[in-house]
Image (cartoon, rainbow, N blue to C red; front, side, top):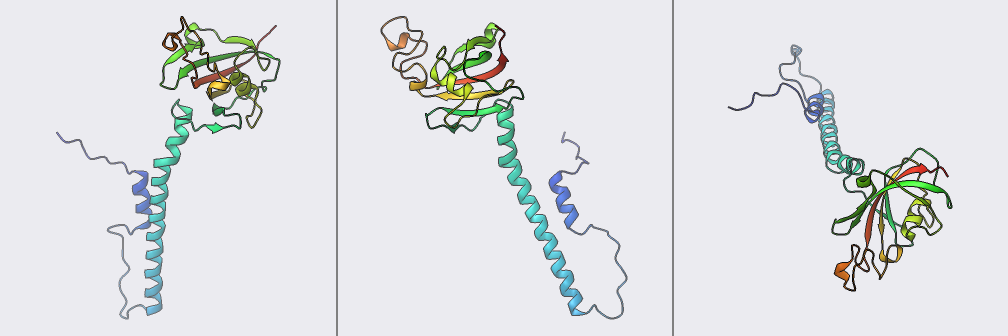
Length: 210
């Protein structure tokens, strides 16, 4: 059975209805003499203008729905996030800008993270362990890309507590030619193969006590 026709009006239809004459609208009785040409021209110009305004509104709505809104929603719901590349080669995108204090070099902080290879393989996640990583940031306790991506510098703003940021690290800012988690001499034995570009979703929880 075909679905019943909807009685609601879409936003797109409302734009058109606002601009076009309504069917069945009351008409004034015509006078014995036709309207002067100047009035007829003005009425015609007004109708054309209203139709142009309607077309522009419809086009604007279509562009907004097709490009702007999906891009904004993507960053918020975990979808694609446009990356900005810093001079060091590190790329970053703030999914959520925090509202707390900025991370500072030498601070003991807590951060949740998920690490992925470029093919999407997850190699580590603090969320699965249920506990954020505690470390001193900016002093070399973690890979260079993490220090730079959290504390900031070279065109990268520092993360604020409560913020979530995606980092894309070139090999030089990650584990380089050695890789990580290797169980033998073969590169295939490594959890992170040599010369891997890594992706991290980092959540800066805040300063740690101690």
